[in-house]
Image (cartoon, rainbow, N blue to C red):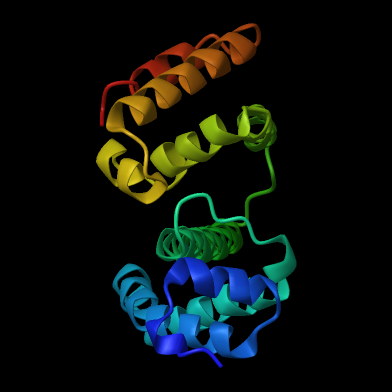
Length: 198
């Protein structure tokens, strides 16, 4: 019989992969308070923060068989929390933007114009090109541009150097400019204005 309180995170992770409920409970008791605090600081809503933490641990248990921890358990859970929080923020922004756009449409009584369609097509094209980036580069780029994290914050979240973050963002911008230049030359100016703003 294990003394779970005294077991290291590494050992708990191995026990978790074997379906040990008590190991899972100890992981939850050990790490959920800090995760909840960080989630509240990010989301400014305790109920949403609790939902995020519950989702993290629900996923941790359900996917325990395929669990791969490249750094340590604490770091793994922290990154999972950051991703869940970013998803929440992104979805909330989308909902807000949609509601605002719909209300503006209703207030003004305007029909969808060719210009609006072109803007949507351009936005969709850029999103497709971002999705096509290599996974690590895409993730760093989205942290930087979609979620406006600084290079230092991204470095801390992903446990990589700031120089690596800067290089990956620069390379992503370079790739996107090349791919999009043939149809939208003005995008050069748009992306170039962001390269050194961090």
